[in-house]
Image 1 (cartoon, rainbow, N blue to C red):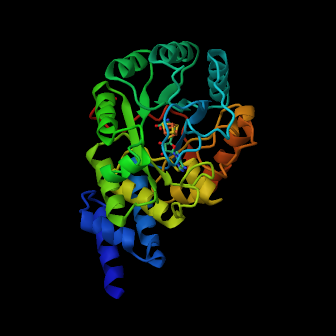
Image 2 (image 1 turned 60 degrees about the vertical axis):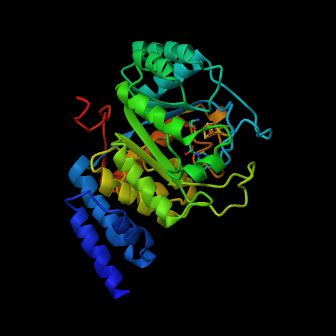
Length: 354
Ligand code: SAH
Ligand code: SF4
């Protein structure tokens, strides 16, 4: 055991200045006993401070539709789930939500939905260009897979960023969990988004049934290989409306280790303290912010729709209004000795010339 602590210390010391960890080194950190993991979190916190500073970027999350034509096994809004009420916000409601977010001080919004056939690229483009005409918000889309031409239409309308998680790096596990998607297509989409000049975010869930430490290590290496601008990582939280209801789900410690390792590997990428992390543990988001994360995505969806957008159970802040959330999260961030950024929080990577 003593050897293991020394090994963890040695790897962390190297990672302070060098993000080229091998798979074996990643596995040592992932497998180290919980009582030794603080050193990993502290190292990630130091790298975060050095690479992206103390500012935390807020993105207001607009969940604009819970219709989905797909059936990802883990997801509460999968098309075949008949136990939920479906909704979609119209253009005016989305615009009003964006305006409200801007008036609360947000510089950036994330528009997320299921794969809803109503929202074609043209419909989205019209909404995005309208928001751009009325606000100075940076816009991130998170609405699943489209063709190259469709992503291009959305980009030309003014979308700045796109989030599309690869969910797991194991093709075999991906196949089991996605009856209507292909891993290779997910990868292709990520390349298209990058080619089109989007700031690209991807990521994965921690603790999917069938995940091994090797797969988790490969997930982290894939994040690095994709040279992402943003990386979103959260625990898998079993949803009672799905066939995975009885699965174990991701643990806090493994999720925090994954966030910390993402910071060590990706250096200056934006990494959110995800809502799923906060839903798993009341202090989950704060712990993630102290383990490498530098972004929070508070919900700005109108209260009456929030309950219907439950990808996973026990989602936090279901009944809080957006003004309350904004104040609450600012307090939490300041309580950690950090500040809320008042900038757009664009990618810090210079490769794309931002
Ligand atoms: N339809 C889009 C965006 C909405 S889903 C897409 O699939 O890309 C956004 C993310 O929610 C998914 O990428 C997945 O990682 C996460 N998610 C879905 N179900 C979840 C669950 N049960 N626990 C934790 N995260 C979940
Ligand atoms: Fe639809 Fe996204 Fe859920 Fe899959 S993860 S079922 S694509 S909302």
